[in-house]
Amino acid sequence: MPDMSASASLAMTHLVPLAAEVDEDKVTPGVLGFIVFAVMAVAVWGLMKSMNRHMGKVDFQEEEDPKGDASDASDKKAGSGGKASPAKG
Image 1: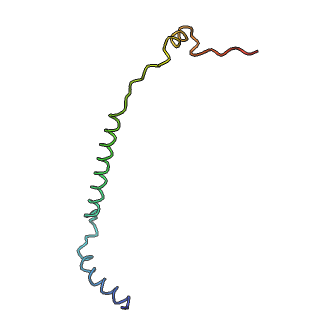
Image 2 (image 1 turned 90 degrees about the vertical axis):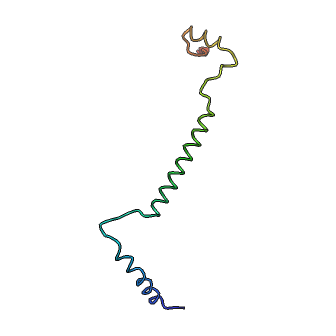
Image 3 (image 1 turned 45 degrees about the horizontal axis):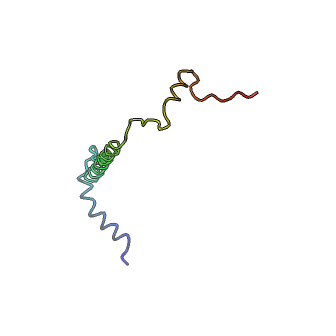
């Protein structure tokens, strides 16, 4: 097994020229930042496309009451707002 300090010094000798090129006053997201941003943009686009498809299937119109609206209309005219419960007492 090679000595860890030797491999660490070898890695540092390869990384020092790269570190010398880095400008301390300039920070950029780089390729990884662009890839992450692009993946998030594609995911949001896909979610919005799916939402539009699902919202297109929604029916916002109320269905008629199958029991009949005659009893509801008479209750509204009487001002009770619904079926009256019998008084107890």
